[in-house]
Length: 466
Image (cartoon, rainbow, N blue to C red; front, top):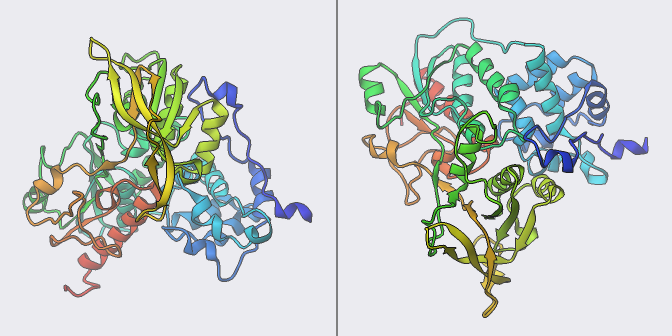
């Protein structure tokens, strides 16, 4: 039984091969592998893994069904808590949520909860297993703004309770950050995202695209003129942050957001589309989070030599360990403890390089991480033709600016209650990146869940008005 300490390994596309294509890196489990991995679960009575899940999936419950070979039953268990399991199984940081609390992990490796979730969800998509929908409409109309993970989760949960839900999406394609932000090789669009959104449609949710709230219509109009009784704002954080260094306005400087949107949503990676993208021969990505890894790995696949420039050391990289590992395997160069001072521009206004300075780690700062300090006289120049800034994003101020009585904080984020999603405006709820600033897909889903619960309590009168 010694092998019960080790998880069943997951098959992946070879690093040299995948660095040249946009196909999914990780192949996931087959039925035999999933059953073997599920057998490692101890089915703890007081399951700590559930406490680590932002949407509280009954993890031992679904894994027991996998052990029994009842994959449809497993999907039903997950479906009680999550509307997007095939997405979460791929992009959730399970290692710092459910898996790090797994009792198996004390002496050996934790159960591969994420890969099992992905297996169950993919099985349901392949076999077209329908989610359970409401028996009948309860007659209440709710609007959801944004079709990213927060909006989709809120809409799905409300639809299951019988609400008539309409989701308004600013772009022409549904899915929010799932479509424009996360690359194809991590999250396939046709095979996974579109199909999971179909499952939300099957619950009875209506979708309207190309509707920019604050331009096409406003929240006040939706409530006053279109009889929506409550609104959930899940509009994300799409406004990029820049460094404010010289040369940032040069041609060949992108925000990671724009770069990934051009590639993912506008299909710049596909030769059959004529979306322009400065693929670049030598690219530097500034930042160390998951988005930085996504941008770097995209540029690599478009044929560039790619450097990640990050001012702290590897131990402080905010990206998932798996993402860093994959990036290194594919040949991305990590310039750590390095910080940009200036982008060098040629006579025609194009990037020709970047002046950077070496850093060392000093005393811890407010975030508890050691503060990077410049090493005097250590500047050097990197030769580049493209720079991608991946320093985080903030919410677009348009919605807050066009909604009467909606309070925001100094970071332009909407102020909302964590438990219920309530905002300062009656019947308006919010969650996800629009409230927290850029965070993870699963935290946005948790906020969508909280918002749906808050709206249900408000509209069903289960909670007294404060």
